[in-house]
Image 1: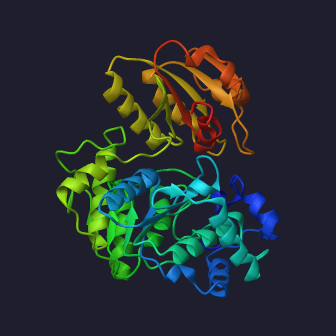
Image 2: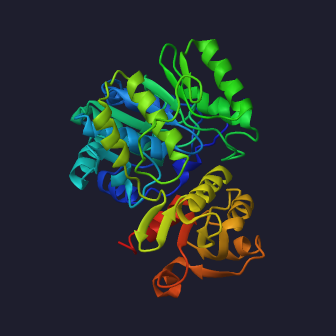
Length: 407
Protein backbone atom coordinates (compact mmCIF):
# COMPACT_ATOMS: atom_id res chain seq x y z
CA UNK A 1 0.00 0.00 0.00
CA UNK A 2 1.24 3.48 -0.80
CA UNK A 3 0.58 5.72 2.18
CA UNK A 4 1.85 8.74 0.27
CA UNK A 5 -0.97 8.49 -2.25
CA UNK A 6 -3.16 11.56 -2.31
CA UNK A 7 -6.70 10.28 -2.19
CA UNK A 8 -8.79 12.76 -0.21
CA UNK A 9 -11.28 13.31 -3.03
CA UNK A 10 -14.00 14.20 -0.55
CA UNK A 11 -11.75 17.00 0.68
CA UNK A 12 -11.57 18.62 -2.73
CA UNK A 13 -15.31 18.31 -3.32
CA UNK A 14 -17.61 21.24 -2.69
CA UNK A 15 -18.56 21.91 0.92
CA UNK A 16 -21.45 24.37 0.62
CA UNK A 17 -20.94 27.63 2.55
CA UNK A 18 -17.41 26.76 3.63
CA UNK A 19 -16.08 29.56 1.43
CA UNK A 20 -18.24 32.08 3.29
CA UNK A 21 -16.69 31.19 6.63
CA UNK A 22 -13.21 31.09 5.13
CA UNK A 23 -13.57 34.61 3.74
CA UNK A 24 -15.13 35.96 6.92
CA UNK A 25 -12.38 34.55 9.13
CA UNK A 26 -9.51 34.84 6.61
CA UNK A 27 -8.77 31.13 6.62
CA UNK A 28 -7.18 29.91 3.41
CA UNK A 29 -7.14 26.25 2.42
CA UNK A 30 -3.86 24.45 1.86
CA UNK A 31 -2.57 24.82 -1.70
CA UNK A 32 -2.06 21.08 -1.97
CA UNK A 33 -3.33 17.97 -0.24
CA UNK A 34 -0.50 16.53 1.82
CA UNK A 35 -0.39 12.78 2.42
CA UNK A 36 -1.03 11.33 5.84
CA UNK A 37 -2.34 12.92 9.02
CA UNK A 38 0.61 15.14 9.92
CA UNK A 39 -1.01 18.43 8.86
CA UNK A 40 -4.19 17.60 10.75
CA UNK A 41 -2.26 16.63 13.87
CA UNK A 42 -0.17 19.83 13.81
CA UNK A 43 -3.27 21.97 13.40
CA UNK A 44 -5.11 20.21 16.23
CA UNK A 45 -2.08 20.63 18.50
CA UNK A 46 -2.29 24.40 17.94
CA UNK A 47 -5.94 24.22 18.98
CA UNK A 48 -5.12 22.37 22.20
CA UNK A 49 -6.14 18.96 20.82
CA UNK A 50 -9.93 19.28 20.99
CA UNK A 51 -10.23 15.77 19.51
CA UNK A 52 -9.00 14.31 22.81
CA UNK A 53 -11.95 15.55 24.86
CA UNK A 54 -15.13 13.83 23.60
CA UNK A 55 -16.05 10.14 23.51
CA UNK A 56 -16.33 8.96 19.91
CA UNK A 57 -17.66 6.06 17.89
CA UNK A 58 -15.71 6.15 14.61
CA UNK A 59 -17.46 4.82 11.49
CA UNK A 60 -16.20 3.94 8.04
CA UNK A 61 -17.48 1.80 5.17
CA UNK A 62 -18.22 1.91 1.48
CA UNK A 63 -21.97 2.05 2.17
CA UNK A 64 -24.07 2.23 5.30
CA UNK A 65 -22.08 4.81 7.26
CA UNK A 66 -24.78 7.46 7.27
CA UNK A 67 -27.56 5.01 8.08
CA UNK A 68 -25.58 3.46 10.94
CA UNK A 69 -24.86 6.90 12.38
CA UNK A 70 -28.54 7.84 12.05
CA UNK A 71 -29.58 4.74 14.01
CA UNK A 72 -26.98 5.35 16.72
CA UNK A 73 -27.93 9.01 17.00
CA UNK A 74 -31.65 8.29 17.26
CA UNK A 75 -31.26 5.44 19.77
CA UNK A 76 -28.82 7.41 21.92
CA UNK A 77 -31.08 10.45 22.02
CA UNK A 78 -34.14 8.37 23.00
CA UNK A 79 -31.87 6.85 25.66
CA UNK A 80 -31.39 10.39 27.03
CA UNK A 81 -27.83 11.01 25.86
CA UNK A 82 -26.59 14.29 24.43
CA UNK A 83 -25.06 13.57 21.05
CA UNK A 84 -22.82 15.01 18.38
CA UNK A 85 -22.48 13.77 14.80
CA UNK A 86 -20.13 14.53 11.92
CA UNK A 87 -21.12 13.20 8.49
CA UNK A 88 -20.53 13.91 4.81
CA UNK A 89 -21.36 15.09 2.27
CA UNK A 90 -23.76 17.91 3.13
CA UNK A 91 -27.42 17.56 2.33
CA UNK A 92 -27.93 21.35 2.33
CA UNK A 93 -24.68 22.91 3.54
CA UNK A 94 -21.90 22.42 6.09
CA UNK A 95 -24.24 23.15 9.01
CA UNK A 96 -25.99 19.78 8.62
CA UNK A 97 -22.66 17.93 8.47
CA UNK A 98 -22.06 18.82 12.12
CA UNK A 99 -25.02 18.08 14.39
CA UNK A 100 -25.57 18.64 18.10
CA UNK A 101 -28.43 16.72 19.72
CA UNK A 102 -29.76 15.89 16.26
CA UNK A 103 -29.90 19.46 14.93
CA UNK A 104 -27.55 21.16 12.46
CA UNK A 105 -25.15 23.63 14.01
CA UNK A 106 -26.12 27.29 13.85
CA UNK A 107 -24.24 30.02 12.00
CA UNK A 108 -23.17 31.40 15.37
CA UNK A 109 -21.69 28.06 16.44
CA UNK A 110 -19.87 27.71 13.12
CA UNK A 111 -18.53 31.26 13.47
CA UNK A 112 -17.17 30.47 16.92
CA UNK A 113 -15.29 27.41 15.65
CA UNK A 114 -13.80 29.21 12.66
CA UNK A 115 -12.81 32.13 14.88
CA UNK A 116 -10.84 29.71 17.06
CA UNK A 117 -9.04 28.39 14.01
CA UNK A 118 -8.17 31.89 12.86
CA UNK A 119 -6.85 32.76 16.31
CA UNK A 120 -4.68 29.63 16.25
CA UNK A 121 -3.11 30.73 12.96
CA UNK A 122 -4.29 27.77 10.89
CA UNK A 123 -4.72 29.59 7.57
CA UNK A 124 -3.09 27.60 4.77
CA UNK A 125 -2.35 24.58 6.96
CA UNK A 126 -5.32 22.35 6.08
CA UNK A 127 -7.49 21.28 3.17
CA UNK A 128 -11.18 22.18 3.02
CA UNK A 129 -12.30 18.91 4.58
CA UNK A 130 -9.63 19.12 7.29
CA UNK A 131 -10.86 22.62 8.18
CA UNK A 132 -14.40 21.32 8.54
CA UNK A 133 -13.22 18.32 10.58
CA UNK A 134 -11.27 20.60 12.91
CA UNK A 135 -14.33 22.85 13.30
CA UNK A 136 -16.35 19.78 14.29
CA UNK A 137 -13.77 18.76 16.90
CA UNK A 138 -13.80 22.29 18.36
CA UNK A 139 -17.59 22.32 18.64
CA UNK A 140 -17.79 18.86 20.16
CA UNK A 141 -15.10 19.71 22.69
CA UNK A 142 -16.82 22.98 23.63
CA UNK A 143 -20.35 21.54 23.84
CA UNK A 144 -19.32 18.28 25.50
CA UNK A 145 -21.98 15.83 24.27
CA UNK A 146 -22.06 12.43 25.96
CA UNK A 147 -21.15 10.63 22.73
CA UNK A 148 -20.05 11.70 19.24
CA UNK A 149 -20.61 9.70 16.05
CA UNK A 150 -17.74 10.43 13.68
CA UNK A 151 -18.01 9.38 10.04
CA UNK A 152 -14.85 9.10 7.93
CA UNK A 153 -15.01 11.17 4.75
CA UNK A 154 -13.38 8.50 2.60
CA UNK A 155 -11.27 5.46 3.30
CA UNK A 156 -10.21 5.66 6.91
CA UNK A 157 -6.51 5.12 7.41
CA UNK A 158 -5.48 8.57 6.12
CA UNK A 159 -8.82 10.31 6.55
CA UNK A 160 -8.69 13.51 8.60
CA UNK A 161 -11.09 12.01 11.16
CA UNK A 162 -8.60 9.26 12.01
CA UNK A 163 -6.91 11.21 14.79
CA UNK A 164 -9.19 10.00 17.58
CA UNK A 165 -9.01 7.04 19.94
CA UNK A 166 -12.69 6.06 19.99
CA UNK A 167 -14.81 3.91 22.27
CA UNK A 168 -15.54 1.66 19.29
CA UNK A 169 -14.54 1.50 15.62
CA UNK A 170 -17.11 0.47 12.99
CA UNK A 171 -16.60 -0.87 9.47
CA UNK A 172 -20.06 -1.14 7.92
CA UNK A 173 -19.14 -2.56 4.51
CA UNK A 174 -16.36 -2.80 1.92
CA UNK A 175 -16.97 -2.55 -1.81
CA UNK A 176 -15.32 -1.25 -4.94
CA UNK A 177 -15.61 2.52 -4.74
CA UNK A 178 -13.16 5.41 -5.08
CA UNK A 179 -11.00 3.13 -7.24
CA UNK A 180 -7.71 4.84 -7.96
CA UNK A 181 -7.76 6.58 -4.60
CA UNK A 182 -8.22 3.61 -2.28
CA UNK A 183 -6.97 0.89 -4.62
CA UNK A 184 -8.40 -1.33 -7.30
CA UNK A 185 -9.18 -4.43 -5.25
CA UNK A 186 -11.45 -5.26 -2.33
CA UNK A 187 -8.42 -6.19 -0.23
CA UNK A 188 -6.72 -2.84 -0.86
CA UNK A 189 -9.87 -0.91 0.03
CA UNK A 190 -10.30 -3.03 3.17
CA UNK A 191 -6.74 -2.08 4.19
CA UNK A 192 -7.75 1.58 4.11
CA UNK A 193 -10.99 0.98 6.02
CA UNK A 194 -9.25 -1.14 8.65
CA UNK A 195 -6.91 1.78 9.31
CA UNK A 196 -9.43 3.17 11.80
CA UNK A 197 -9.01 0.15 14.08
CA UNK A 198 -7.06 0.97 17.25
CA UNK A 199 -5.26 -1.41 19.63
CA UNK A 200 -7.59 -2.58 22.38
CA UNK A 201 -10.60 -0.69 21.00
CA UNK A 202 -13.57 -2.90 20.03
CA UNK A 203 -14.11 -3.23 16.30
CA UNK A 204 -17.66 -3.77 15.02
CA UNK A 205 -17.61 -5.30 11.56
CA UNK A 206 -20.52 -5.51 9.12
CA UNK A 207 -21.09 -8.15 6.44
CA UNK A 208 -17.96 -8.05 4.28
CA UNK A 209 -16.77 -9.95 1.20
CA UNK A 210 -14.31 -12.75 2.02
CA UNK A 211 -11.23 -10.85 0.81
CA UNK A 212 -12.19 -7.83 2.87
CA UNK A 213 -12.92 -9.89 5.96
CA UNK A 214 -9.58 -11.67 5.64
CA UNK A 215 -7.75 -8.33 5.47
CA UNK A 216 -9.68 -6.74 8.33
CA UNK A 217 -9.19 -9.83 10.50
CA UNK A 218 -5.48 -9.91 9.71
CA UNK A 219 -5.01 -6.28 10.71
CA UNK A 220 -7.16 -6.67 13.84
CA UNK A 221 -5.08 -9.64 15.00
CA UNK A 222 -1.85 -7.86 14.15
CA UNK A 223 -2.58 -4.77 16.28
CA UNK A 224 -4.70 -6.37 19.00
CA UNK A 225 -8.28 -5.38 18.20
CA UNK A 226 -11.19 -7.44 19.59
CA UNK A 227 -13.76 -7.65 16.78
CA UNK A 228 -17.45 -8.54 16.64
CA UNK A 229 -18.65 -9.60 13.21
CA UNK A 230 -22.21 -9.40 11.87
CA UNK A 231 -23.57 -12.90 11.34
CA UNK A 232 -21.21 -14.39 13.92
CA UNK A 233 -21.08 -12.51 17.22
CA UNK A 234 -24.31 -10.58 16.50
CA UNK A 235 -27.08 -10.48 13.92
CA UNK A 236 -30.34 -8.73 12.99
CA UNK A 237 -32.62 -7.73 15.84
CA UNK A 238 -36.09 -9.36 15.70
CA UNK A 239 -39.28 -7.45 16.34
CA UNK A 240 -38.07 -4.06 15.10
CA UNK A 241 -39.05 -2.34 11.85
CA UNK A 242 -36.19 0.12 11.18
CA UNK A 243 -37.19 3.69 10.44
CA UNK A 244 -34.98 3.63 7.33
CA UNK A 245 -36.32 1.66 4.35
CA UNK A 246 -34.78 -1.41 2.77
CA UNK A 247 -33.83 -4.91 3.92
CA UNK A 248 -30.15 -3.87 4.23
CA UNK A 249 -31.10 -1.54 7.10
CA UNK A 250 -31.53 -4.55 9.41
CA UNK A 251 -27.76 -5.05 9.26
CA UNK A 252 -27.03 -1.34 9.72
CA UNK A 253 -29.31 -1.26 12.77
CA UNK A 254 -27.64 -4.32 14.29
CA UNK A 255 -24.20 -2.76 13.71
CA UNK A 256 -25.36 0.47 15.36
CA UNK A 257 -26.67 -1.35 18.43
CA UNK A 258 -23.52 -3.46 18.77
CA UNK A 259 -21.37 -0.33 18.56
CA UNK A 260 -23.36 1.43 21.26
CA UNK A 261 -23.03 -1.61 23.50
CA UNK A 262 -19.28 -1.74 22.83
CA UNK A 263 -19.09 1.92 23.92
CA UNK A 264 -20.66 0.94 27.24
CA UNK A 265 -24.16 2.27 26.55
CA UNK A 266 -26.89 0.22 28.23
CA UNK A 267 -30.01 -0.10 26.09
CA UNK A 268 -33.53 -0.56 27.37
CA UNK A 269 -35.45 -2.73 24.84
CA UNK A 270 -38.43 -0.36 24.55
CA UNK A 271 -36.28 2.73 24.05
CA UNK A 272 -34.08 0.85 21.61
CA UNK A 273 -37.17 -0.05 19.58
CA UNK A 274 -38.42 3.55 19.64
CA UNK A 275 -35.06 4.95 18.59
CA UNK A 276 -34.62 2.43 15.79
CA UNK A 277 -38.11 2.90 14.40
CA UNK A 278 -37.95 6.71 14.44
CA UNK A 279 -34.49 7.04 12.89
CA UNK A 280 -34.39 9.34 9.87
CA UNK A 281 -31.76 10.19 7.28
CA UNK A 282 -32.32 12.54 4.35
CA UNK A 283 -31.68 10.92 0.99
CA UNK A 284 -32.04 7.29 2.09
CA UNK A 285 -35.17 6.16 0.25
CA UNK A 286 -36.77 9.35 1.54
CA UNK A 287 -40.28 10.04 0.24
CA UNK A 288 -39.90 13.74 -0.41
CA UNK A 289 -43.22 14.15 -2.22
CA UNK A 290 -46.07 11.65 -2.88
CA UNK A 291 -44.56 8.93 -5.05
CA UNK A 292 -41.16 10.68 -5.31
CA UNK A 293 -38.18 9.19 -3.45
CA UNK A 294 -34.59 10.30 -2.99
CA UNK A 295 -31.89 7.67 -2.55
CA UNK A 296 -28.13 8.15 -2.80
CA UNK A 297 -27.22 4.96 -4.69
CA UNK A 298 -23.83 6.21 -5.87
CA UNK A 299 -22.01 2.90 -6.38
CA UNK A 300 -22.91 -0.66 -7.43
CA UNK A 301 -23.43 -2.02 -3.92
CA UNK A 302 -25.76 0.86 -3.06
CA UNK A 303 -27.62 0.35 -6.35
CA UNK A 304 -28.16 -3.33 -5.50
CA UNK A 305 -29.55 -2.30 -2.11
CA UNK A 306 -31.87 0.18 -3.81
CA UNK A 307 -33.20 -2.50 -6.17
CA UNK A 308 -33.96 -4.74 -3.17
CA UNK A 309 -35.76 -1.84 -1.51
CA UNK A 310 -37.82 -1.13 -4.64
CA UNK A 311 -38.91 -4.76 -4.84
CA UNK A 312 -39.74 -4.85 -1.14
CA UNK A 313 -41.68 -1.56 -1.32
CA UNK A 314 -43.54 -1.98 -4.61
CA UNK A 315 -43.49 -5.70 -5.36
CA UNK A 316 -41.35 -7.81 -7.63
CA UNK A 317 -43.13 -6.91 -10.89
CA UNK A 318 -43.44 -3.13 -10.44
CA UNK A 319 -41.31 -0.89 -12.65
CA UNK A 320 -40.29 2.57 -11.47
CA UNK A 321 -38.97 5.68 -13.17
CA UNK A 322 -35.42 6.75 -12.36
CA UNK A 323 -33.88 10.19 -12.46
CA UNK A 324 -30.10 9.75 -12.22
CA UNK A 325 -27.07 12.01 -11.94
CA UNK A 326 -23.62 10.70 -11.03
CA UNK A 327 -20.01 11.73 -10.69
CA UNK A 328 -17.72 10.74 -13.53
CA UNK A 329 -15.29 8.96 -11.21
CA UNK A 330 -18.03 6.54 -10.09
CA UNK A 331 -18.85 3.26 -11.83
CA UNK A 332 -22.00 4.70 -13.38
CA UNK A 333 -22.23 2.03 -16.07
CA UNK A 334 -22.59 -0.70 -13.46
CA UNK A 335 -25.06 1.35 -11.42
CA UNK A 336 -27.33 1.87 -14.44
CA UNK A 337 -27.09 -1.81 -15.41
CA UNK A 338 -28.07 -2.85 -11.88
CA UNK A 339 -31.08 -0.49 -11.86
CA UNK A 340 -32.41 -1.57 -15.28
CA UNK A 341 -34.37 -4.70 -14.14
CA UNK A 342 -36.71 -2.52 -12.06
CA UNK A 343 -36.63 0.51 -14.37
CA UNK A 344 -39.42 1.65 -16.65
CA UNK A 345 -37.38 4.57 -17.97
CA UNK A 346 -34.58 7.00 -17.09
CA UNK A 347 -33.98 10.73 -17.07
CA UNK A 348 -30.30 11.58 -16.72
CA UNK A 349 -29.34 14.86 -15.09
CA UNK A 350 -26.62 17.43 -15.68
CA UNK A 351 -25.97 19.04 -12.29
CA UNK A 352 -23.60 21.55 -10.72
CA UNK A 353 -20.51 19.64 -9.68
CA UNK A 354 -17.07 19.87 -11.25
CA UNK A 355 -16.87 16.07 -11.57
CA UNK A 356 -20.46 15.42 -12.69
CA UNK A 357 -20.73 12.92 -15.55
CA UNK A 358 -22.43 14.52 -18.58
CA UNK A 359 -26.01 13.31 -18.86
CA UNK A 360 -25.55 12.21 -22.47
CA UNK A 361 -22.79 9.80 -21.39
CA UNK A 362 -25.10 8.26 -18.81
CA UNK A 363 -27.88 7.97 -21.40
CA UNK A 364 -25.54 6.03 -23.69
CA UNK A 365 -25.32 3.29 -21.05
CA UNK A 366 -28.89 2.04 -21.40
CA UNK A 367 -31.24 0.85 -24.14
CA UNK A 368 -34.32 1.66 -22.08
CA UNK A 369 -36.35 4.79 -22.86
CA UNK A 370 -34.37 7.76 -21.61
CA UNK A 371 -34.03 11.53 -21.76
CA UNK A 372 -31.59 14.13 -20.47
CA UNK A 373 -32.28 17.25 -18.45
CA UNK A 374 -30.46 20.01 -16.62
CA UNK A 375 -31.00 20.16 -12.86
CA UNK A 376 -32.38 23.70 -13.10
CA UNK A 377 -35.20 22.39 -15.34
CA UNK A 378 -36.43 19.93 -12.73
CA UNK A 379 -39.23 22.16 -11.46
CA UNK A 380 -40.66 22.43 -14.96
CA UNK A 381 -40.84 18.67 -15.48
CA UNK A 382 -44.14 16.79 -15.58
CA UNK A 383 -42.25 13.71 -14.34
CA UNK A 384 -43.05 14.60 -10.75
CA UNK A 385 -46.78 14.95 -11.23
CA UNK A 386 -47.83 11.75 -12.93
CA UNK A 387 -46.97 8.13 -13.61
CA UNK A 388 -45.36 5.31 -11.66
CA UNK A 389 -43.09 5.92 -8.64
CA UNK A 390 -40.11 8.16 -9.34
CA UNK A 391 -36.74 7.60 -7.68
CA UNK A 392 -34.12 10.33 -7.88
CA UNK A 393 -30.78 8.67 -7.29
CA UNK A 394 -27.04 8.68 -7.86
CA UNK A 395 -24.72 11.27 -6.36
CA UNK A 396 -25.49 12.66 -2.91
CA UNK A 397 -24.35 15.99 -4.35
CA UNK A 398 -27.26 15.79 -6.80
CA UNK A 399 -29.68 15.02 -3.99
CA UNK A 400 -28.30 17.95 -2.02
CA UNK A 401 -28.94 20.24 -4.99
CA UNK A 402 -32.50 18.99 -5.59
CA UNK A 403 -33.92 18.19 -2.16
CA UNK A 404 -34.99 21.70 -1.22
CA UNK A 405 -37.12 21.93 -4.37
CA UNK A 406 -39.52 19.33 -2.99
CA UNK A 407 -39.79 20.62 0.57
